Length: 308
Length: 288
Image (tube, rainbow over all chains, first blue to last red; front, side):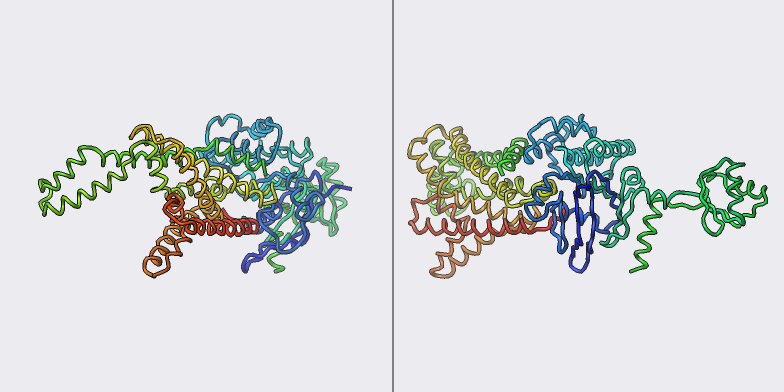
């Protein structure tokens, strides 16, 4: 049975007259990479703050590594690495000094962990540069370095690629995959940049106005967002034969109502129409279908808005 | 908690705020030493005498001569004879400015977490908040002791430079140590109060304003009340700024005058510690 790293049950948080979180349930198993998606103000950071102990919850239960209660959470948080909101360090200290401060504070015995963390995020050449002189991307990298220093079992990253250039984004993606694969780190990433989440996460949760509106796996996402040509014909079986024999295409499926979904020829639907017509198959309609994660997300929150 | 203390000591070592406060104190002593030196100089005395003759100011010269002579005598009393005397005069006459030098320390130790947002890194890893608060307070107290040492040694060194070496016998050190010991609870009260204000206000700017304005205004109000209402002098026991002066001049006051401010300081320490720890524990850190 998979070890449950994070278990949020009916977590709620109220601010004045705004319900920031409304009975949120999230569960992460060991080794998962979970993508947390939501608009600004949806409640992502609020939930991450509750998990990391920065704010209290009003209702619900929270457990980390199967432990609850004050001492359980204290133990759990020692196995946690995180960036919540923007990275924060002492402005007049260097990268190395800042990490050394936290190494001492956290009681990590091995000084090498600082060099390893900086090497991982490609920040080894900052020398005597003070944190206040860092670019946004450098600050973000240092935040990641602190989060992974000490090799935590659970990593929480709140908008981690903000400020990173394209090279940095690719490097960051590789780091995440490596940490998950080689160290078995469970990772929770929240991001607006959905295309990046698509590349790393295995499971997703969409949060809207404090509620989880949809949770799905990557496989489900790929299935729901796979682009295809939807072709309505008068004889689907015959059309399938034409596809296989004359177009050498086996990437299709037949749906009820004489509809075919063809996962090839996306750039050349005219060829499909031509071939079918040439073999006396009437084509009622041919439409290109498929969602990006963005439109999938918008559709999910749109449905939530309608139901509200 | 030891790790917390060591990490903050590391930050003190890497930072320049302690150095800055020490330099500020030494600059103050330097300025005062220069002023004393100027006042005691022959040029200044000549200036005073020529003023009395009316060569500079044409007014009734007899009364002016008398006033200036009295002023000269009073000034001469302040002029230290040697480094030890200068150091002692800084303690007895100017040590109520010390709380103002403690403010930058507590801002650097505790307030930096709020202004830089670094509390997120500590609180997310170390769930228990009380040890974090207490360790920051302990560092502030340690730095206070350092600043008091800088105050004493710095004033003696600068005084010796300007007025000559001397006055550093057993009597000087005994008096200095007694003053430092009597002022310690009051310094502690200032530190605890500053930390409490920081925990409640959560902003360094508000903390600075409340600390400075609050202390000065409180002191002024109590002084006004005690001067205008007969028999209200006992209210001065609740003025921590005044208490610093009382402790520094303990030989001129009664035992009650010394004990009451100490008791008040202990009450301030207890109250601000309790409120500060409680607020720090309960605060939702969703700002910055």
